[in-house]
Image (cartoon, rainbow over all chains, first blue to last red; front, side, top):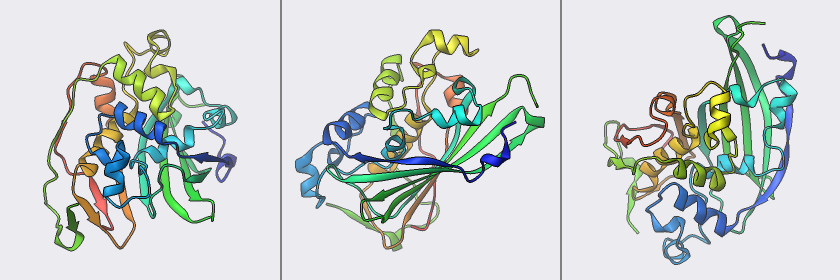
Amino acid sequence: MIDKRFIGMNIGSHEVQLEKGALKFFATAIGQENPVYFDEKAAEEAGYPGLPAPPSYYFSLDLLQDEPFKYLDTLGVNLNHVLHGAQDFEYFKPAFAGDTVVIKAKIIDLFDKKNGALDFIIKEVRVENTEGELLVKQIMTIIVRNPEGGA
Amino acid sequence: MTYIDLSTLKVGDEIPPLSLKPISRTTLALFAGASGDHNPIHIDLDVAKSAGMDDVFCQGMLGMAYMSRLLTNMPRLRKSKPLVLNLPILRKFMHSSPVAGKLKKSKTPRTDNY
């Protein structure tokens, strides 16, 4: 069972500049067919200032740091026992290639089920622009399988 | 550019179905690189087996990226309020059809605040 004192823990923040090459690679990897996500001309014709970040790419921004899973060590969780249970996105303002965004993450809840066989980590990730405006808010549910059951 | 006026959308409207190519280990490797999710359990068979899995399995966020294509394939939405997406990840799919599975989705994701 994960110690409840970690509820409210700030995981940290980092900056990412959205790169058009990375956005195109992501679009290719997911088989994106809408050209505004990989063709700058199509993006321009759609009235965008650059290639837009696709809806689920905001999740990847949190991973674009040196040790994205380090907080799991802090919580005493083995990465191999982790499942991604759910992911919620709330979109306020879009980001485009060339934009710099700030990613801030914290643990907002911890609970367990099945007598401790499953731990749940609820993590909030905020993506802001450099002016501090909230662009996207994400809530991630992580499920930890504890093979040995409750502690 | 075609727009959908949000006021014309109603519960029960269908989103056009999305058919996907079979998912291969190459798909998972490319998505690992593109998404920044380098968790080896999705790309390294040795790690997957040592964790008790029969094979590597799909990143949850790849499933979600496919789901998001249901929306990005639609005409652009005019919205005045924040868009909320709440998509449970398809864990059953992740574990039962790890590679070479076929996905076809036409289920409407839950959306609020359109």
